Image (cartoon, rainbow, N blue to C red; front, side, top):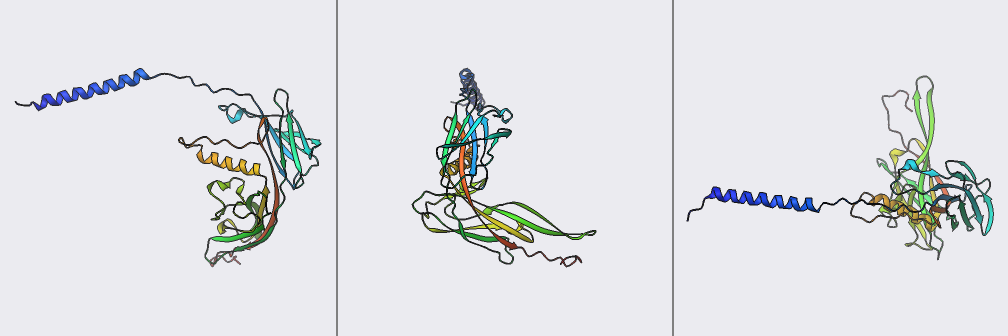
Length: 317
């Protein structure tokens, strides 16, 4: 028997083309257009308010949107009735100024007191929330050190965590920087500016989701009732000449901690098609948003950055 390889090749090619045609027919015949509709849920009042022990109370009030709405459709509520209660006593109705922002005329929250916010607006359910203002945790000590030739400043703060309480913290660093420059007409001139500094830390009490837009958040699970030394680094290139660096340790309520952490988790996974959607935490009854509380302990330290030499500049001092 003699095999004709040309005929065999043609038969194989025809079979391959037939398989491809059948596969295409299967996929085309199974194609079905599905109209996916997302249920349009009831609109709710959105309350966003951070109570601080050093500031008058304010709150932003808006209306929730459909999940497919763009930010341009955000609707601030300018005609809401916003009440502030302290320890079961109604103290004030906040005044609206602009873009859904409501302000108190005279109420500054007190540590340990209980505060409730109630928002009402025609056509929407009443929304409310209640928190207890956390107590301030003072910074007991601070330090900053820079080694010659090092680009990072090693810093630390010490604080005493209250025992037998679930405590939550937010930490950030600000700077007031004074720098000088030479002008042919005016000679040496000085300018200053303020801003937040990026900080890095290898502390075991923080993880990737602790670094939020508001600062570093952590709790006292590792050091309940103990004195804790929190170490961190600042990039020396973000400072200039003489800088006053402010260490801000906020004692925050649990709800604020949960809110910030859930927001950071959402940012991490929003573009991951294989992860579950992360719901941002809310503590507003019959509404959406957050009522948070914080108390600030601040300490400062002056850091002098040795200027680089400029031997060719006759005006350098």
